[in-house]
Image (cartoon, rainbow, N blue to C red; front, top):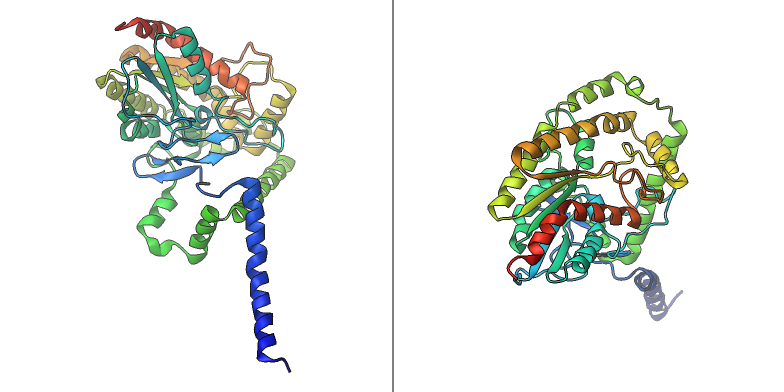
Length: 397
């Protein structure tokens, strides 16, 4: 029979192992991956549904204390020689990586490879008498109406001189997949999360424990994220194997054809939101440029071999409604915005063909871009606004 001392020693040894092994594993994970917080790239926002997490650090990504993708902080005070441009939009404006790393994991966009970085570089080189700041306020998943909400609730306080809004793709995706009429505020996402906050009883103990571990354990986050990505890749590959999608309207089911017909008349709200942004910005003397972002379904560029693989992969994964919808409706959205620009006086730039003459890889999936693609967007924005930039560079000198 064991003595009480030996029993106590055995218990202490078991406890030490139970605590020590996970602690050592957590220590090793932190040494390799860094501290876990803040690890969530998006946080809930009371005005715009979500926004980028201030001070987020990820692989090649740095977000400042104001929640903008930028290595430096942005002061509310602005010097007389400073010109500020805010880049708004979704994940393409933000500078997200490929959605399909199983096809092309080569690109990991850093803060020095984003549209805003290249545009800021060119502005300061071309017009050195002014100090140009291009601030990346893009947020993954944003719709145009969320740009408006973020402008009013956050960006406006920093006294921008220009708003450049790179949008169109997320909005058309939502229009194609949700019942009409389209409502960007209803469809902005994070409904369940907000409802859970207003009804705390809906939050289960396992869910709360998981959130705590995600925010406080580098090991748990690595295991969680790795398992989630593996599930996503497996699901995508399964869809590819089962895909028998046929191109064009004939390849759509009866329900998809009805959804397509409903989507074709849903652009007025998008144009109306652009008008709202332009008028509100104009009240503060801010110039606006609405940019229709590139999309692989409508580009006429000769795709590289990797781009062709990415395109074929996307075509097999998603419903043919999206491919056909973009090919036929994206030009219609461009026409609507062009007509709105002529009527309202805002600037509109259709960049769906910006890569048509380029040989390099510009797409890292159907919408996200390589550094080469980001630089081309920055150059196109510069060219579109060059006369205005030139006038502002010599003003009040």
